Picture (tube, rainbow over the protein chains, first blue to last red):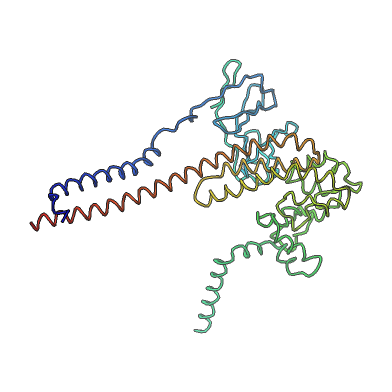
Length: 144
Length: 271
């Protein structure tokens, strides 16, 4: 028989090498998703800040911008008092708009209304708008 | 006494079964509006049956959401003091629907249709119907309905301008729904799509062909971005399937090799 010419130690060695190789590949395959889950994310980080010239946000007015990849809005409610919020309605994801005459944000899809600080005043939104930290540095507003 | 206990047990089981198999039915019967009007024949009961087929019913928008009143109190359900509005007159319908559909109302009022309000022009229910209102599609623009008031030519131009973008939106909704079913978090993308869909449907209401044409490319570009994100997730899922197959094949091969190794040890022991 062909098999009988191969010494059993060599057969065993070959099988152990093959099995170890497969084990190593399987271990790597199992570790990869764990590594991907634990590794820091590339690209935009949570620490990203956005700077907007102060004159772009008039008193009682708003400025829409992109914050960490999502639509956001900054409002100058009173002189020197700025509030930054997500511009995405918490109901179904439409972009809110500012109604200066009412002093409220309104969602054009189903009439959800929010106060200048993002609390729900009426309509179907289930929760308030998320707010972001704002600071004023010289002639700039820093959000984040 | 024993019979009474058996009857009580049977009733409890029946109620539990009903609660398990028909939660929707139990929910729908909650308001006094439905309890009272649902059983009435003709004009007074018909709206309930029509509403049951509507997009409003699917999304939990019930009678009192539009008509006001107290849905928990039989005696005062239709009391103006409890906010009952009743049925709006024709010219008041855009304001009635526009309490929720504010964006659409705004575009409609600025359109040729809105300018003809009160002069024989159409309002919301002329095209959408009232209680059986369905999810709006370009099929609402058709010769039968539009020629009730005017020539179809201009309406057909608008339909041609919107139909391709609307098809893109519908396809994207289906693919995001499919991704959601396999456990992918699509809430954000679905929100963006809903917002775009709403904006685009507002555009129809301007009934301005040039405006629709000029903005269509912008909508298609935004839809393309969402589609690319969805496609990237689909590619990732396909890659995972492939690597999953490779892992299964390696496990099978490893099992065979382990079996051969075991045999090799046995052979050595026998010698």
